[in-house]
Image 1 (cartoon, rainbow, N blue to C red):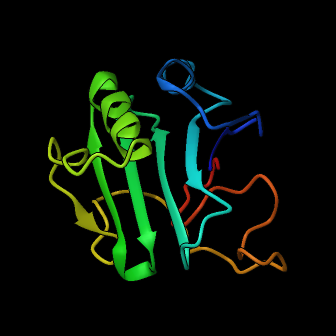
Image 2: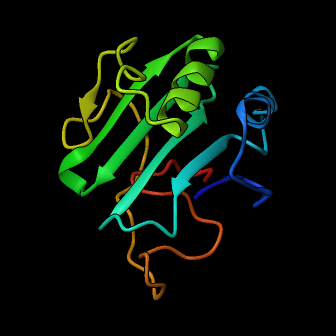
Length: 139
């Protein structure tokens, strides 16, 4: 099952293409990120894709395939490419990430201004409403 949420903790279970498009299109100040995660599946670790609309109006797109070693990020100015990528990730299309050059999170993009994650008491390592992984201060 998929679960999508935004900065206001609005959630959509099993979002379709229209829901994903709408959530990305509604990104802005005060609602700067969308997280799509696989939940209730027999997958070890954290599996998600997330997008952050940065203050410079670029999109920072990330995905994690189970472990920190498989956590990648990229940036783009194209909302359409972000939407296409999130839709492809949600449908498990093998070519969903081909439109980007990805950097492992261990080699972050310049000026990401993002702190390292802080462990929490929850089973997933996050407090309710927190985004995954390397999150910007506004998240």
